[in-house]
Length: 239
Image (tube, one colour):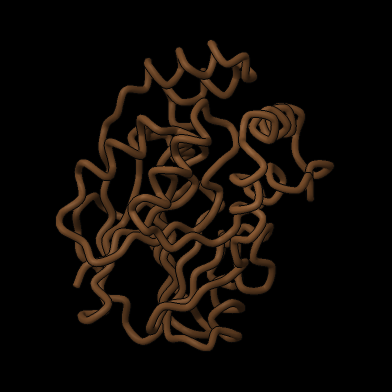
């Protein structure tokens, strides 16, 4: 059984379609938050994930778009995009986003957006932060997003980290691990390709993958929708 792990799609339909088209047969689709925010197609992205039966948890942008919570913590461009998305989405779509849980458990994995200490906002960027989440997890492994950088944290109190793991390499999760698949729609590791991961729960392993998508078309859509121009410009550089 293989599960596709996606995160931080951020309303980027072109990137999501490219990832879904590149996937092998999978038994599940897990999304660790920030389905909306930034991009030009929040409604279509949400509809496609629901059509595919994706397991989704809430990200800080999802909550901001759905309820306005946390907008004061956003930079100006992120806040402007969140407000526009809230206008574009229907009341029913906003209700779906508002109802997303902050964490979810599937087998040996707990899903969150940021961390288990702070599911919506903490950036898990260090071994110490990963170890702190693993210490309070009820499962052996976890999945997160939020940083927009693929990473694998393995171990307990002395977690080790692999940042930007090699594309396609299969990694053993060992006894404890936290997996961040990077960002589908807004990569920030210097690689503009959409990022995702494939998890084999039975073998307790993960591989990380990238796929190209129509960046120029996404940029055109962002500008046409009158979203902040920086949200289009940064896509070309993966920053």
